[in-house]
Each structure stands twice: as C-alpha cells, then as structure tokens.
Length: 197
Image (cartoon, rainbow, N blue to C red):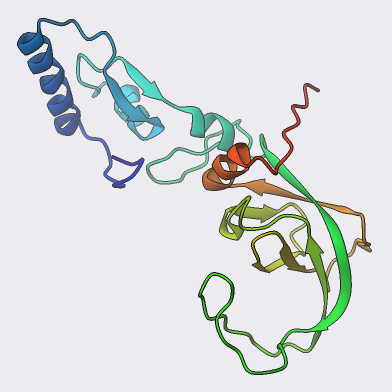
C-alpha cells in the first residue's frame, strides 16, 4: 500500500488481507500467526478502533526514526527527525561561476542540467556522491547551505550565504529522508557510527 502504491490503508482493504490469510489457512491446513496491516500509515485505524480483527502487526520503523506518519507525512509529536545524520567532509572549496562555460551536453547519468547565471558563488565539493545517496534525500542541518548537484562520488553545495566560515576539511551534516537512510545504510562506502550518548 503506502510502501509502494501510496494507497491509504482502510478497513475494507485490510479485511481483504485477513480473508486471504483465512483462505491460505484453510487451503493448506496452516495457522499463519502474523498478519501485517502495513506500516505506520495504518496506525490511525488502531487509534480509532477501526483495525480489522485479525491484523496483529504494524511495521512502524520509519515513524520512529523520522518522526512522521507515513500516509500523509504529518509530524508525530515528541519525536525527532535527526535520529540518522550523514556527515560529509569538504574536499574542495572555491569561488566558481554558477553558469558553466562552454557547450553543455549530458552528464554522467545521461541527464541534461539546467543552470541559472547567479554570478560567482562559493562552492564546496563534499566526499560523497550518488553511489552513496540521492541528493533529494538530504536536508542540510545548516539551512544556509544550498545543494547544487552531485556526481557519482561528489556532492556540490553552495556555501556563499553561510555565516559559518567553512574550509577544506570541515564536515557538513545532513538529516536524511527515508531513501537516504536506506542507501547510506547499505552503501559499503559510508562508515556507520552508532552514538550511544
């Protein structure tokens, strides 16, 4: 449902799931113990007493680690959205034109980029790229940082308007959306550190 198809769980849809379980039990002489009613998007059914009898599991990991419910994206009170953070080091920092010079073609991913001439900007290149995380899954903790783009192994950000004087070697921190947590967790190039503080 919401994991792929974005369909909001309703009692009638989940009743169908319970019926499938009952059919399997009868046909194969089984007793299936667990019937998962989806993820946190089904919690509203539990809270309103509408969850069908027979649904006995919800998977609520994303809600716990991102602090939002998964059907409508609403924040969950008293939770945090920074349980996972990504840190990437600045490997280059230079003043560069916002509009590349020359004839533009496709990038390494066969995409055509569109650039706006915003003059010279202070750009940082970070040691992380698309092989590790999709740029759309990153939220800079320093809200003055603008994400510009990424290559397979580097991320380019605009630090022109930042109050902190970033330099080569500094680390920039990002909060992650669900896809970012997934890709960083499975990337062999991202070091995982558990902070027990």
